[in-house]
Length: 268
Image (tube, rainbow, N blue to C red; front, side, top):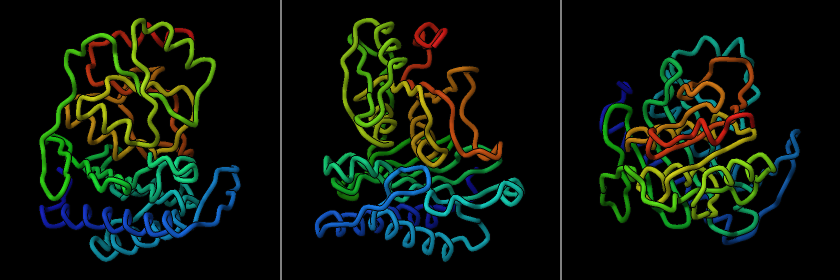
């Protein structure tokens, strides 16, 4: 389905791991912080990982274009022609990186006809990699060994709910109140999707903007593990490159799709 053979998939995982090493070199030695036009931070680690990933993917699959957070100025008139492309966040969780709490990741996803069909999420601090192909199983790789992961279905109470360390709103507080008995777990970046995929968390609600590169790789892993990532307004699974804007709307990520998420988000 992805159009990638096993060797190519392993090569992408290797690219993500090498990007993680580059990020940790900057993490250890200090870094400069700049501000982009939207006032979000960018560091020398973001840029080093971006260059490594873009160059690696271009060499591996020269016929597949790459859209990275750090090269997101490509016009819609160009992007709309793409039936498949790489969607990359070289350093997801830059704010967590700056805080030095370890909760950041490398995200690489292959998008085909709007769907995330192959996803890799790498945690630079631990070296753990989560990867999956759409329609296949999801895996957690540690020390070179793959373990099949699945979501926690049905979840036991209290529900384990992922919360962003850097993004919290009044609407989110009300949603959490509606959920009843929960255990809040602070977690940064796309690692939230991976924790749900491996069954250590149950729900990640996000009422507020994210970008498409924040969610694609994690969505692929989560769906392959049995979970869902749904738009809060429609209940439809996320698709990518469907409109000029690269911002996502509100969403809920669930390990168990039967949870009453519509009740939680109603009217918010």
